[in-house]
Image 1 (cartoon, rainbow, N blue to C red):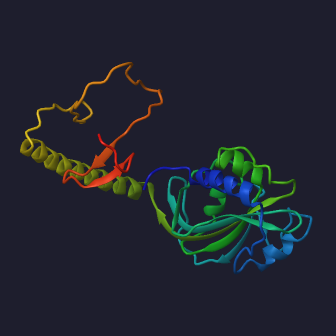
Image 2 (cartoon, rainbow, N blue to C red; image 1 turned 30 degrees about the vertical axis):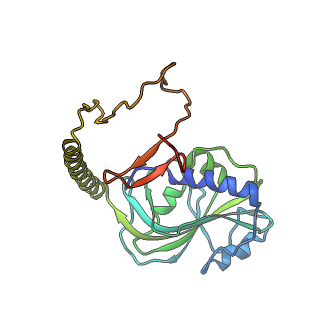
Image 3 (cartoon, rainbow, N blue to C red; image 1 turned 180 degrees about the horizontal axis):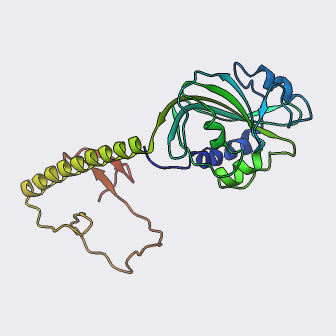
Length: 251
């Protein structure tokens, strides 16, 4: 698993979609009837039957199994969806995971989504109500989008399916690196066999790249930062083409 800020990535995608499609009504999910009813009130900060942390985070636990809870540094594996609820009760679904969603637990401010995740034990599910400005500007590291009106709230629905400790993550990364190194070694062996069979005299660059100049050109050389127009054909070592800039390019 790679380090990432998926909340920021999902936000950038959804902003573009909402610019085109606009907002739409959606049912939040099963076990959140109280959230739906409360959202119809113009008092968007008040949700019936929800508990409130000193940070202002509002939450309602739907399933509690008494399992272990994630701590800072762990990686939470969960099902996640969140919506923007406006004061008039309308919802805009912003994101719904279609496969396990993995988040490094790293609190940024009081009342953030990471504080919410740390309330859950393994197998638990809950709904959380967050103030949107902090989420967009701090968690997503972006600007608050235009469609977030005063009094709106973010409704997060989360089920915690797994917890990966920092040590387990490091061990996994070591295994991934080992597998990648072995793959590179195998690829180099195959490449050397190809070079020897075809009697290629080119020497490898420091990066490992081999290149053969078929025909000299003229003019300036491309440098880092320049935009270039190229024609190319890409093949596997067996000659099978997997990409090309032109269908019938005569290179």
